[in-house]
Amino acid sequence: MTLLKSTTAVLALTLGASFTAEAFAADLTWNVSLWGKRRAFTEHIEKLAQEVAERTDGRFEIKLHYGGALSKSRENLDGIAIGAFEMAQFCASYHADKNPTLTVTELPFLGVPDLETQIKVDLALYEHPAVQKDLARWNAKPIMSSPMPQYNFLGSGDAPQTVTDFEGMRVRALGGIGSAMEIVGAVPTSVTAAEAYQALDSGTVKAVSFAPHAHLAFNTIEAGNWWTTNLNPGTVHCPVVVNTDAYEMLPEEFRVALDESIEPALQHYLETYAAVYDKFYPTLEENGVEQITFTDEELANFKNKAAQPVWDAWLADMESKGVPGEELLQLVQTKMSE
Image 1 (spheres, one colour):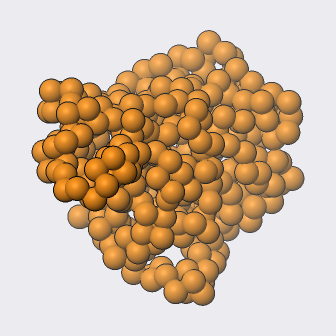
Image 2 (cartoon, rainbow, N blue to C red):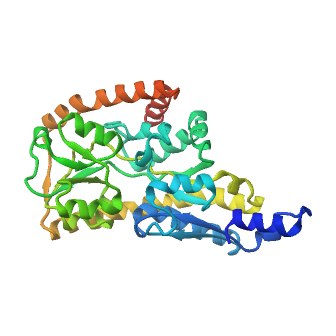
Image 3 (tube, rainbow, N blue to C red):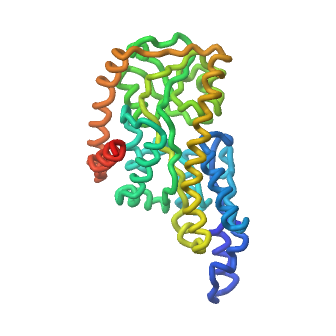
C-alpha cells in the first residue's frame, strides 16, 4: 500500500479521529516509476532504496518498478502530480513545456567537464526558486539528478566524416541536441529510449544520440555500425522527483533517512558509471562498430554554427514564458567554474 493510499484509508476508517504518522509508519512502501531495465542510469535509485531500508530497519521500503509498469516514461511527471506513485525518474526533454527551467542544462556545448560537476550544477539548479515554482505545478520535488556524460551518435549506414554529412540524416536527438542537429541540417526525431533500437534497426532513424550506458542498455550497438567519439553535442537532464505531499507526510525518521541516503546514492552512481566505459568500448569492437573522431576544425565548425543560435532561441523562449533564463544559465556557468 502506498503512502498516499494508506493515508486516505486511515482517514476514512478513523472518521475524523486523531492519529499519528507512527500508526502506519511500520509498514510504509513508496513506489518508483521507471522505464527500461535496471542499468547504470538507475543505480543511484537502487542504492537509495537500499540505504533507506538499512537506515529504517526495513520499515520504509522504496520499491522500484521497471519497464514502464506504472506509467509510460513521458507520463511519469503526470503520475507524480496526481499521486499515482511517490517517486519517478523522467527526462526534461520528453516534455520541455512541462518543465522549461530544467532544460537549461540540455543546451548544447555547455562544456560540463565531468559527472561530479554535473551533479553540483543540477543540485544547485534544484534550489533555485524558479525551478521549485516550475515543478510545484506538478506537485514534484527534485531530490537527485541522473548525471550523464556527453551524448554521442551511434548510427547505421555511411559514417559521417564532416558536419555536412549530417545534412538530411534523420536522427534520434532530443532537447538542445535536437535543436543543434537541426541547425546543421539533420532531421531530429523524438524517439523514446525504449523505442531507439527498433527505430535504428528499421531505418526509421539513421543515428541515435545516447550516453554510453544507454547504448548498452537499449542494445543500439547491435543495430549500428559507427560511433562518434568526440562530437559531444550535449546531454539530457533526467531528475528523480518525489510527490511533494508524500514527502511532507513522511514521519521525521523516514524523511531524514531518505535525505541522508541521497549523497551515498549519487556516489554509488558515479562509481557504477566509471565502470561503464570498461565495457562499452570492448563491446563496440566486438560488434565491429567503427569509431569516428572528428578533427578540431570540424568540431569548431559545428559549435560555431549550432550552439549560439540555440542558446539565443532558448533565452527568448524563456523570456516569453516569464522564466529567468539568463539567471538560470548564469547559475549553471558559475557552478561549473567553481
